[in-house]
Length: 343
Image (cartoon, rainbow, N blue to C red; front, side, top):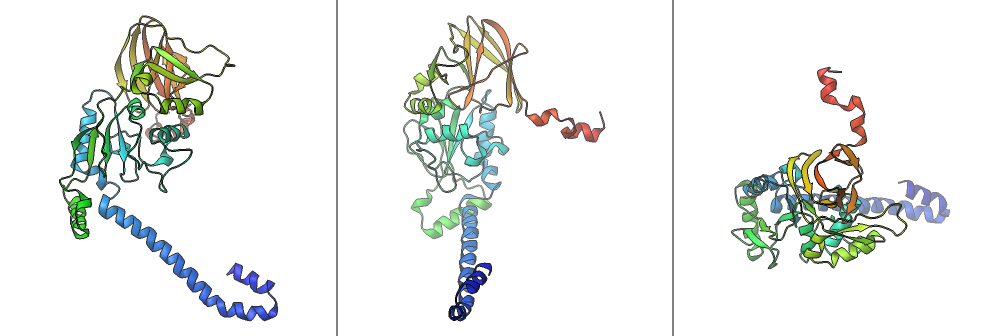
């Protein structure tokens, strides 16, 4: 209305009558366009629900519960990679993922996923999901991804199939697809493909060497072209020539650790090495995670662009990572303490 009113005021008198006559048609066309856009968006949501399940229904299926139980029984943390799946992350359902919905990840993680999926620059699908099958498995292995979950088959010889649907939807008629979707939404029917990655690296490991780069672009390019063995034995770090201190120089011949505790905001390892070592943890890098060796804070280096790396000296040590965001320091946000009146 505002635009048409301005146009009427600016047009000469002889043009105002024509525009006034066109106004009902213009408004009707705009209304139809907006209605069509709204309906299309709603149909897209309905279609996703019918053929892939609702927000919670997707992950409440027996296949997902079994995968969560499988991961819980591993004895150490592993991730799942999510391909062609519903656009919500799986963490809330007991399955830690590296896939899912892009905006939930930091810039570091997004760039790492771009390298995993051979994306160039900021290339991604309209919804930001991981949707390719020519992914870089060594980088997924480095990221501790032991299982991959997909609504479509991932035809790769380097993955072991542990679950697949009883029926392949693309072989069915439209009516058959609809019946399968209904059985899936309202019954136990499985539509998932679940694969195991036999070459996954553990969440924590020591690297005998470090490989240094001048910037992150150079490092990510090298990582995308590296094999799993090279990634496993070299911690990739950005370390400019003008850095204020020398880079890490691991010199240990043997190193081992035991996982004491793994919680959402605290991770504890007991470590023993016979020399200076470099310990990698493939958890997402954040400035709010702090590392302590025997109670003394030590710097977390962004290893492999997206993960953690710390230097550990010779001997036995307790290594602890703690999540310490700024809001933890604000006392009134401790709701449990507030409501229980234990000041």
